[in-house]
Amino acid sequence: MTENRTPEHEARQAVVDRVAAYQDGAPAGTVEDELRKGFTEAGVEVSDEQVTVLVKAIDTNDGDVHVDEVLH
Image (tube, rainbow, N blue to C red; front, top):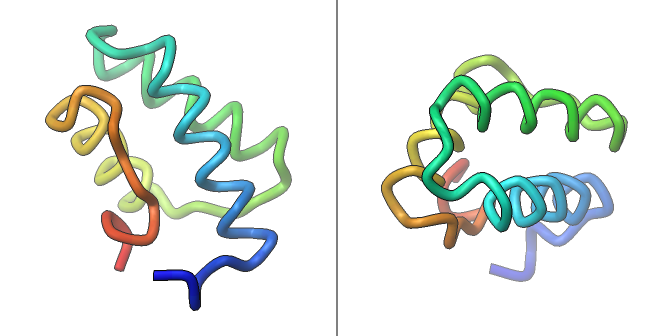
């Protein structure tokens, strides 16, 4: 799904990849906190609902999460 590859999308994916790589198996609260922190640092806006969906996806998919597929 390359049509969504905007700089904002790339920043979101980078945050998710970074958090998923070292947070796999961590409590959901930790993953959520790290995602929020990363999105803030990257300067991208993500809704509370989107963060919740990403946390669940990281937990369910053992960290292998593609933002464009999860937040379609």
